[in-house]
Length: 369
Image (cartoon, rainbow, N blue to C red; front, top):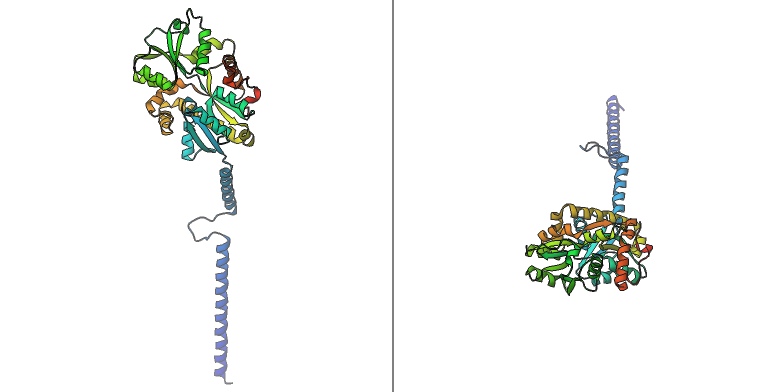
């Protein structure tokens, strides 16, 4: 082989080696880039690299949110369209806004019988109803209905067309039209009159329906009458000749609080024992939310009035706003309930044992968290 051939052979080997080396380098470079992209954020992005601790934190937050959603308990609430249901409206608004701690559903009714049916058939977990009915259900359900809270004091008022009645004793010898015969309003009125040192008895005529008596009063056909809210506000709005002569809640306090803690506690919340035992944390959460709701109703009656109309409890927001201060919406729970309610129950038991289920509820009736 001559010198020129040797030189050409060496050149060919050198070129081939260089190409092979370049191909190997490119392959390694591409493989390395792929592994980096899979193991971390792309460093050429404007977004800073995500540290592994950030990934773990995000995962934990996501897990916590999922757990929180799964822990939201469904609570079915039944309530009467009236003062006992008014305290719920802000909680109802929270549910619609998606900010409630639990998953609430609400059923509103104009009849206590509907509430009883919902509770006894297992279609409601919590209900707002009259306090005497709660005691009746405690006995009828083998103590499966527990008193959760007192949510409404007295809503009974005596209205006068005139200005002669300023105390219970001023009712001596007068004629009074009323509603609620054979029920709590009659027993309350009788007890107050028995303790009023009347010189002459009061002649009482009962009408079957609140609406009937309210219509008569609005037309100015009655001089003296006893009605509950919100019918009181309706009469006052339609006929300015009337005024509130007596707040029977205040009169009850004057007579009975000298010897006990008794209140004219007419509305309450109850819970089924089955639900309370299965979901104590959900019950606690509800009580906290309900207290907030009642505070908002009392502090902002205008806003509450709008919600009361929105949820079909009343049809006129201005009337609802005016009625709220007279509804004595409260939130009394725990150990305070028994000393407040028991004297009231004893009076109802004497008047008509059936009105509270035949016997005085024992201490297990009162739900103590």
